[in-house]
Length: 246
Ligand SMILES: Nc1nc2c(c(=O)[nH]1)N[C@H]1C(S)=C(S)[C@@H](COP(=O)(O)O)O[C@H]1N2
Ligand SMILES: [Mo]
Image (cartoon, rainbow, N blue to C red; front, side):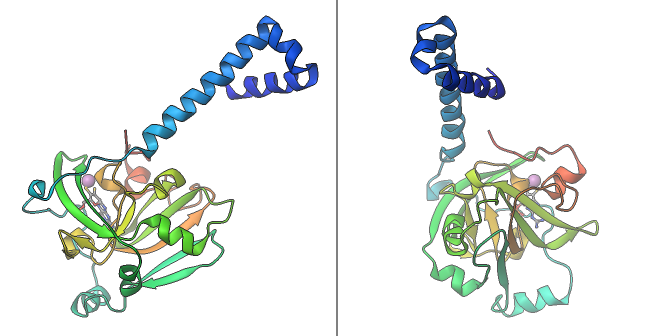
């Protein structure tokens, strides 16, 4: 049943009196529809909040290849690499009550999560790696999302073919326990090819969502006005789905 007709039905129910309606045939099917709608909502939420499979240390790939950008062009980034990213900052901005700029050291001081997961790239390769970093939900607790916030946009330092890489996720994935801002791979600082010093891990989704070289996280109400409007670098350019999960 469509949501609108469901709402119309509910309005009729309120106007006509529930008990009277419930005794009639319409009432019974209406209540059935409400139940069905609730059930499918729960199913979707259940699927979206389920954990991605986690692996054991023995499963870790000996080499985690780099793909897409494998470094950031320009002198500024080389200076960051040489200084172990002491001057790198992650800005959390947009529809938040308390915008925040964090250093790598501050991110490492937050409670950390470590997870061994499989990364699947649509180009046809996979790798298993162990990622460590604060949960994105911890950062969101600090900045407090405004009620209008519906998506988080991840801004990256690199460009591909002259355009900045970026990605976005909704709040279900933002609050998912396995969504972390990773600064370490297999117990070591992130290698440059894998997005040093910070990358997103949103484990229920495909490789292109795992934004590397993070400089900013922006809370927005809509993706329409962000760059190409489709929510990500590849989404804007090719047929890649914005929601790249199961
Ligand atoms: N900033 C940025 N993030 C990115 C990309 C990129 O080119 N730039 N490529 C994406 C793609 S397609 C994949 S498969 C993964 C690759 O991650 P890896 O380099 O650690 O293997 O990063 C994703 N995140
Ligand atoms: Mo990819």
